[in-house]
Image 1 (spheres, helix red, strand yellow):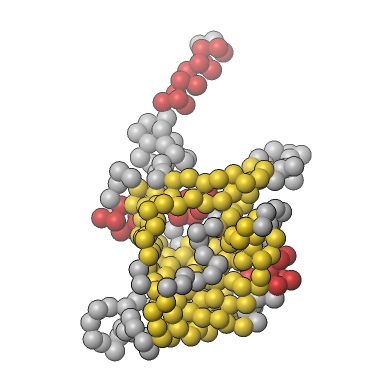
Image 2 (image 1 turned 45 degrees about the vertical axis):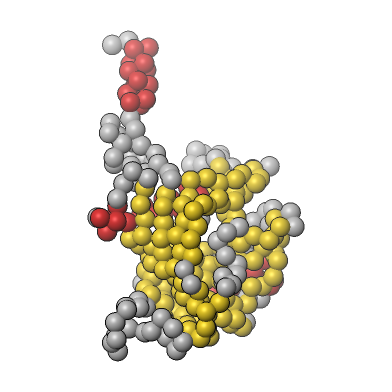
Length: 279
């Protein structure tokens, strides 16, 4: 077979492969991540706190400015489905837990949130996050569950209800938090997801290009079909533990503002390019 024919067959074969992400295969069902839209529902325990503003500012990428030292951490139990799938009928494909840190920032004078750290316990969610610019790593999140039954084994979803959450990564505990519910509120934790700005960053491996990323973009998330449950608010405590290499502990709270417990649903299938950071 001559060279030109081999190339033509190779191109033809690649065009026949399907899938939104690798691995791309003849039927396309083996891709780690399915084509958007992606539908989510989650139950969250959240804590607002103040960090040292100068430290928080040092985590922001080019294009963003610090709005205040206010931060929020969200511990979330998620359930996911693709547009044509019913992944929740095979729960291991659909469920995962996540811990998300957000900083208060601004882009060209508009308030936004920025995520310096996020941990998840499923590879599918990790890949979806990297596509969006969430800097996901693998970690283990655990959150107190509430059940609609009288039992010493469940907190009440109401005044006096106590909830806890922890995050561990690479066998080291990074975060633990507790929230005691007090009242219903109309206000979401701040900063929130609605105006989250992320950095899509994919480096080059080719020699001589290690400092020149293939993709380096400041992007803003777009979500739709957002639904939010009643929001419970109360008192909270949170501890960030020392770690030999993880810089999360630099964001250790100087004060804790409040804790929250609520559920929400949303759909993701778009984002906005704010700025190409490659210069």
